[in-house]
Length: 175
Image (cartoon, rainbow, N blue to C red; front, top):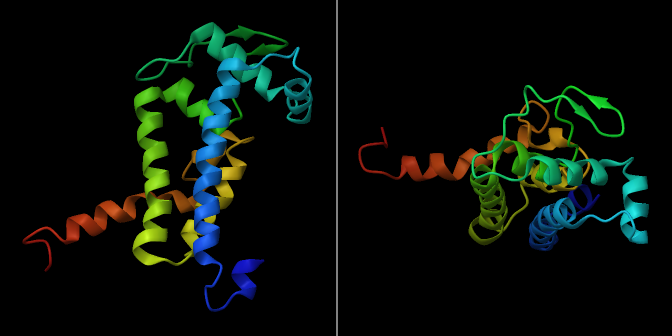
């Protein structure tokens, strides 16, 4: 709504700051819930119910398979936890990346995501459509693993922009 109403970009910096903080907060909160989820705590149980058991399931994967530096191969997994699963189902994108791809890949992805949002704030000072998309998908990532798939979130292409702009500034690359 602000993007369409605010033609002069007065809200851009505020939205970028709040979006960056939201991404950081949601990613840390998701990982914290993955590790410390307890259904006996009422607010956690209520949140888990609202999210149709997703928190309980991601905590189960964490407890059963753990977190590895370079992820875990869930392709041959057959799980019988509150129903039969023959595929890895972790709908929280933050936890999904940590569990399946590992700590190193998750850290690189989260740092790149945060870097692009902060770069948009510090270098450009304006909210572009791809940055707005990254902010929106930060919220989607809390309940959908597809938020970090390029086929779902085209705004992830924005993560490559800083690297291409650095490459173009190298000597002999400006043709």
